[in-house]
Length: 148
Image (tube, rainbow, N blue to C red; front, top):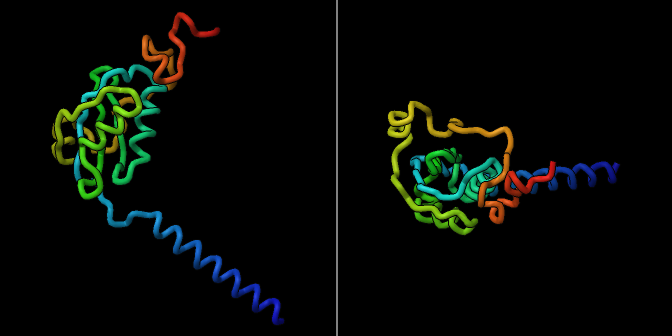
């Protein structure tokens, strides 16, 4: 009987510890209240898009990213209390893609301009044909060098 009580106490303490730990990992106060539009060069394929998105989405305060490789624009839904457009552009530049702040808008302005809610996917890619010159950055071989 005593072992059963001790086991129950240990399980309750472990569950409470887990809940407290997870509570600190969730940023309940963060709310995406702005959209940064960054002019970014060199994002030419699905692997590049994944790299940029992954880098940004790992940052505190970033709620979502949308990338337009044709026009070289990165849309980032973010919390202005946590980060700035300049920090976002700097983070992209650190991955090897030149990036500068083009404009900042509210999610409502974003919807008026694009007709989409902030956070919706503008562009998606099913795969990658390789970067035509950005291979050293994204790890993909050029189409002519790709193994078949």
